[in-house]
Image (tube, rainbow, N blue to C red; front, side, top):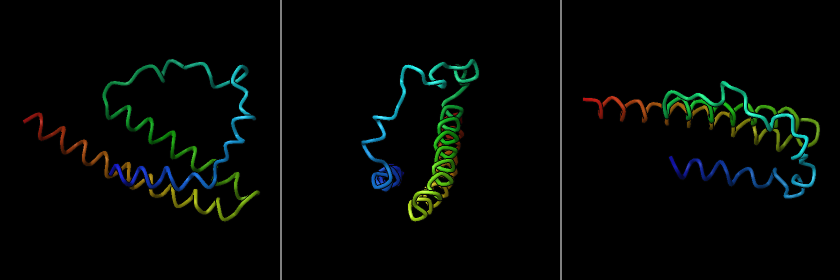
Length: 104
């Protein structure tokens, strides 16, 4: 699975430019504050699900935004999003299997 995550990460390099850092308003970022629900995770599985959800939502937003600027890159993000869905499913199946076998 590690190689799958690495492949997804590297496939995004063509879409992201280092120039994006210039446009990041770190001081005034409205999402900088942590909300209470983000502070509570009951298990590692909760953490995994929360982070997969973030990356899947981000992929969807980028997919839609790129339809205006680069349909080719938009399609890449769509493919990545579906690959992330599959990775999440596989990861959770593996984690659940390991969790069940460790509790016996």
